[in-house]
Structures are given as C-alpha cells and as structure tokens.
Length: 498
Image (cartoon, rainbow, N blue to C red):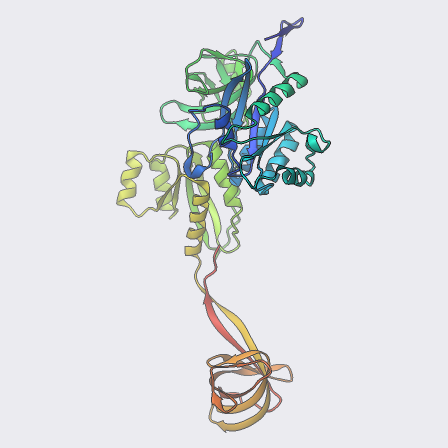
C-alpha cells in the first residue's frame, strides 16, 4: 500500500473500494455476492429477503474489495439510501429477463443522490428469455447510459448461478478504484460510518460499521453524536476478534453506552470526556396522527432487534391509509420484550408487536396470565399485513346506499290503503322486488315506500330492466300520481378494509 505523508505527518494511502449492491427484490443481489465468494456468513434470511445491512470483504488479484449488501424490500428504502452514502461504487443489479422494476428506480435514485459511481450488473443472463439489450434501452429512460450505447456507465452480463461475468465485474470495480484514486487517511484517530446497529443479548449495544479513515483499535474510546463508549469487542466481518482495523474494513464494534443510529459517524477520542462533548439528543422520530374524539385508533407497542428494522417498520406503517383507523405508536424501540413493555400494552389495550426479539421471563409470565395480544414477526411485510388486519377488526360495518334505477310513472291501476299498483317505464338501471323507493314530483321528494311486487308483460318477475315497462306493487303512505318519478335504491352493510 503506497503511503503519502505531509508536513503534519498525516499519512494517506489507497484503501479498498466500498461497493454497495442495490436493486429490485429477487433480482439476485445476495446470490451475486455469494457467487463472488463463498460467503459462509451469508445465510438466507426469512422469506429469502435480506432484512439487515451486512458488510463483507473479499480479495481479488491481491486487492481487497468491501461489499455492502442492502435489503431488497421497499420498506428499507431509507436504509438503502444510507448504505449507498457509505460507498464509492454502486452495483445496480437487474434481472435481464424482467427488466426495470419499482425498486430498481429507487436504487437508481439512491445512486444518483449519493454521487457514487454506478455499474450495471445484468443478472440471470444464463436464462433463455434474458434480454440484456432491452434492459439497456429501459435504462435510457432513467438517464443511465451504458458504455455499449455510447454512455459512461459500465455494464456487465453476469449469472450468479453459473458465475459467468463475475471476473469481469470485479476487474471493473478495481479499474474504477484505480482511476478514481480511492484513498484515505491511514493513520491517526479513526472514523467509521454505522451501517447497522442492534442490542445484542450478550455484547450489549453493537454496531456494524465501515471504517472511512484512520485506525481503530480494541480499547479505543469512541463516540457518535448520540452515544459514547469504549471498544469492548472488535471483530471483522467473519466474527473473528481483531486488534485493529484500517480504512475500508467492515467491522463489528460493541461497547457503546446505547445503540447508535444507522448512518451516524463513529469517531475515536482520547477520553470519555472528549467524546461526551459531541453528544446530542438521539431519538427516532415517531409522528403520531392527531386523535380527535370519536376517532377509531389502534395503539401499538413495538420492539425490534435492530434500529434498521425499527426504521423500516415505521416507514412502512406510514404507507398504510389512516383515514378510517389511526395508528398510535405508544412505544417503539430496540431490544427484547420486557416487563415495562407488557404493562404498557396492558394498560393501553395495545397489541405488542415483536420483530425478531425474545421475551424475557417476567414479561412472558405476565402475558400468559393476562389478556395481552402479542404478535411475533420475522418478515416486515407480514407485520404490515397483520397491522392492516387489526385495523380492519376495529372498523364496524356501516350502511351504504346503492342507487339501482328510475321509473317514469305512466298510469295508476289501483289504489288501496297504503298500497298502489302503478305502471311505468324504466328509464335508467333496473327495478327489483324488495327495493326501497323515493317518490319525486316536480323534482321535489315527497316521501318513501317499498316495492313488494313486480310484473312485466303480465308475468310476475323479480327484475325489470331499462327501457322495459313494469307493473309495480308499491307500499307506502304517499300516493303516487301519473308523471311522478320513482327512484329505487337498496341499503347494504359494507365492511370497509384498510
């Protein structure tokens, strides 16, 4: 590694390029990473979706490359954006058979906004229906011009299954790193960006981070704008204990006073006092709706495994319509379900939503002995679906009027007490036996009644359609006259769904 030194003894050296992998769900992002190297740490997540941001490093042609694998589900849009900002290069993975999808466009947006260098990876090229040229044309509409069409964006045809094109992809990454002269300060106090954080049952508050400059060593005093600490455990991406790490390295750090937020910058300090000077209040903003008297409300208590999950859940809950039932989040935080969570859920009549967390023994005992609704989830979109169902339960069925048809009254055949037989022509819709009817004269509503019998061509029927004549046995207090207009409708109980 070539090092440059200036007057202040700051050393600058080349560092491994950091590459973020973006794209639509199921287009093969995780499969591509597994093809690049046998990532034994890359186990398949629930439902086949990578739920957390992970960082991995490989060596190719004696040079290191760091990869960030970002979530594929749309609910993690914010995490993908933060992942992209921690990188130098963005691989846009597109299924060569399916082309550009909604999340492909989101990924393109993140790449452009973060200013990283894009590479297009046209995946699943081994399939018969792969059409890379069509995808390249679709990319033009997104202002992505690949080199083969006269642009500047490299594109590679790859197959995560057969490993076709993987060498070419890695060579392009290293070529870009060489051309862009990717460097970092290689000595002095380190800095790193948090790409994932969680409350580990054994290690306590823990963060996955990419070192951006300087050195980190076990025992260093560290801090972000919201938390302080001292490095307790220090591991590489394989979970191996390390003594120090350099720019470009992905690491796992524990020893924080609290769980840091995704996207925060971790800095090395000389002491706790120095790190404390930079502390600012940390919170995840929860914007609950304004609740008025009479509003239908679903209270929630939410516990998640990591901040990334919590942010993703809050993001997707925002997309659920709340015009009929409002979501009121009483508590949302990282960590296992505890006694306080259960008591809050009980006193507030709130479902307790647990995402990939455990329930401590005291909390479990209270749940078993009280009527508390506890919902456990592994997958974000299952959680969202269940929240919608809980909102549906709160809704009561409401009566809704459905207009059916109109009749011009042409004749009155018989009049009895609160009953008449009238004849007319159906001018719109249809008339059905059992419908309610409104009587209009000179555009003024006089009253209502009901259809208790119906004839067409002197035969008893249940329905008479438009442009046909109908004999109507009407029941009601208002007397119908020739020239009146009868409007027919029915009322049904409708259960609205969220």
